[in-house]
Image (cartoon, rainbow, N blue to C red; front, side):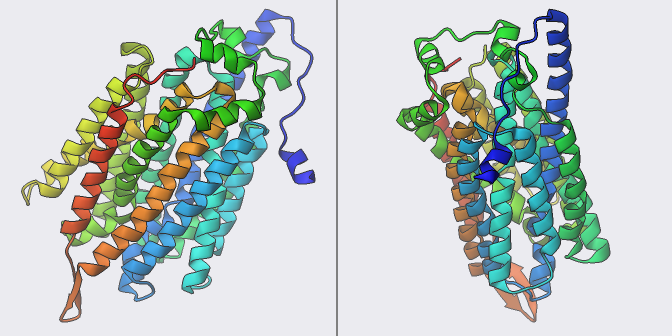
Length: 449
C-alpha cells in the first residue's frame, strides 16, 4: 500500500487566481515537461537496445546462437508489452514525475548487471525485467502530454516527443557501438547503465505532476480548447476507471492495435537484426553498419516531426491520410533496401533515410497518437498501454521467428558462417503491408477531442 501511496498523484491545490502567474507557470512547466519526457525517454532507450549492438560479438564468441538471442530478445518485448499495459493503466492515476524516474533508474541497474553471467536463463529473466521497467516510460510520456497539451496542439508535441526513440536509437547505434568496439560487448550494457542513472535523477528534478497539483486549471481551460463531440462530453462525466473500461468497447482500438503490431514487427526486425544483416549480407564493417542505422534514426526524427505537424496543420488532426502516405514510403524503401542493385551504397543510404522517415512517422501515429485521439483523454495511459500489448507481443513473436529463420538459413563452410536472409526479408516486408491495409481501414474512425 505504501508503494501505491508513493506513486499516487498529488492532491489539487487551491486554484491560482492571477492570470499572469497561471500563464507563466504553464509556459515554464510545459517546457520542462517536454524536455524531461523527450530527452529522458530518449536516453532511457539506450538501456533497451544494448542487445541489438552485441549480437554479432556474442555469436562470433560462441556465447549464444542466433536462435538463443531470439529467445533473449523476445524476453524484453514480452516484459515491455505487459509492463506497458499495466503501467499504462496505473500511469493515469500516478505522479508521472516519480513514475518515469523510477522506471529509468531500475532499467539502468539491470543493464549494469548484464554480463556478470552468460547463462541463458539469467539473460532471459534480466532482459524480461528490463522490458517491464522500460514500460514505465511511454505511459508516463503520453499521460504528461494529455495533461499539459490540448487536443489541437497534441499532434505537434507528440511528434516532438516521438523523436525520443529515434534519439535513443541513434545514441545506441553510434555510442554503444563505439564502446563495444573499444571495450568489448559488456560495455554495450554498462555504458548505458551508468548514463541512465544520471538521467533518472535529471528526470525527477525536471518533471511535473498534473497542472491541478500546482493550483493551475486544466490545459483545456487554459487554452480554451474544449471537446465538442457527444462521446467526448460523455467521457468528461466518467471516472478514470470508467473511461479506461470504455477502451475495450471501441472496435477501432482493436484494429489499430493489430495495425501497430504488424508495423512493430518490421520496426524491431530492422532494429534487432539490422546490424547482423548489414554486416553479413551487405559486407559493411561494425561501425559502418551502425552508421547506416544512425541514418535511419536521424531520418526518423524528421518523420516524427513532419507527421505531427502535417496531420495537425494540413489535415486538421486527421491521422489516416498521413498514415497511408508514410506507410507507402516505408514499404517502397524496404523493397529498395532489400531488392535494389548491389554495389550502390548511395541507393542503400537513400533507402534507409526514406524508411526511417516513413517508419517513425507511423510509430508516432499507430503506436500512440492515433489511439489517444480515438480514446477518452482521461484514459490516455491505458490507451497507450493497450496498443503497447499488441505492439510488443508482436515484436517478441517477430524476434523468435526472425531468430529461427536466420538460424535455419545459416550454413558453416570451412568454419565460416554464411547467412541466407531471403525468407526473413519476405516476412519483414509482409508485416508492413498488412499494417498498411489495417490502418487504411480506420479512415473514418471517430476522434474524441
